[in-house]
Length: 168
Image (cartoon, rainbow, N blue to C red; front, side):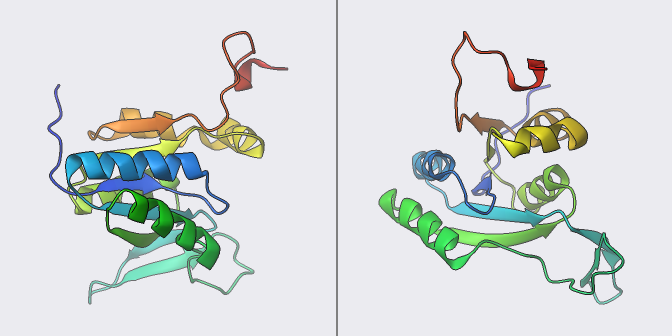
């Protein structure tokens, strides 16, 4: 099946303390496509509990002892770094908070905005351990939704090094 390219923005998944290379690549692609950039940061400690009759989303914490239901987005310094990269490439950027499963949240934003492409970074360090338990966002996006996904290397190890999950 060949999936058409959407006519909307480039959607990029970002984490706090973001990898600048991922934002630069996403900004560059948005410029080449003549579109905007939408940065999505997902708070996995919260989940979407459904929609109220007025259309608003109910957000609940995964931890029942936590009362805060406000998604934790990017810090002001992370947003400034994203804006700087987007400005360098001459593209407008918007920020969208998400909750729950990162792959589902990114896919939903992409669907809602008819995204041209999704961009995510390859995980490094402790993120590799989390991927072992929750699965790779990039892999899930490439198998569970129809938009093109670009995975940007964040900390490549070379061909002589073992792959992250191949090490004991």
